[in-house]
Image (cartoon, rainbow, N blue to C red; front, side, top):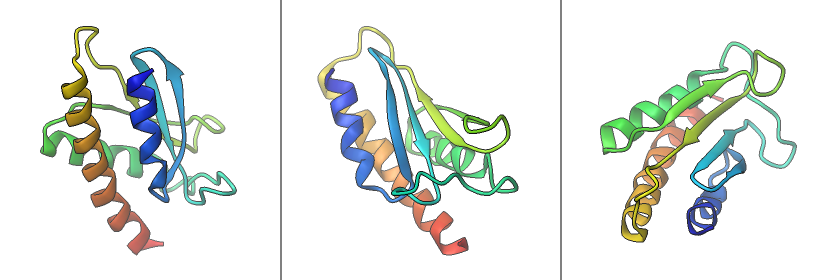
Length: 113
């Protein structure tokens, strides 16, 4: 529960649409409009998830990007699956890196809209 609760704090980012999953297998969906849960355009799909994954990797965190969660084509998401032996301090570090990575990507994405 601690990991999911910490991930939910990242909903403050305008492009975070949903956080779902169970245990240590969680997903985060990214959207163009948070209130309407509108996905990014078809041509943009995959860009956001991959951009966040690249920034996270650069910052020291491996996450799994994915697309097509809305209709098979549109929709950006990442999968977060830490090892079962992760400690609270490591979860906090992971959230910090993910927060910074989303922040960096969000600035880039919103500047293009």
